[in-house]
Length: 121
Image (cartoon, rainbow, N blue to C red; front, top):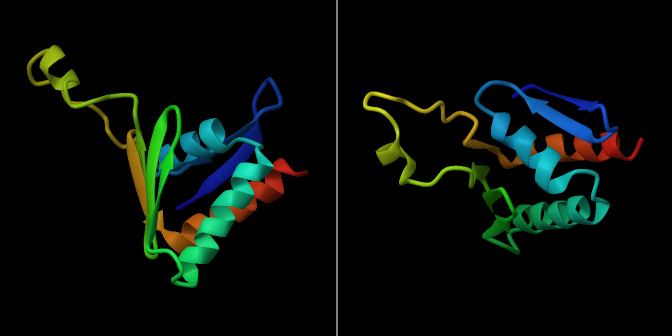
């Protein structure tokens, strides 16, 4: 899982993740941003998972939903629901790599710590 952090034209932090993990980048950029309180909260949750004091945790946001457990992190976009397929022309397929992503807890922790360092520069 590769990623890059940049600033957009409004000096807002943007996370861009490699193919298959794009949703993680959108989630970090849109739901977490430079909110240090949110980043610290996520790091506390990860610590509790690592210490087996917590089995799992749900993440709720405006555009994304996530699930973290002791092994992995899954992030889902709320942009589309299951009814959209009925409205599309026949044989239309959606590119869903930008709708969900999953990675290991340690990879997620490493990316989050790098994000924290980037947004506090």
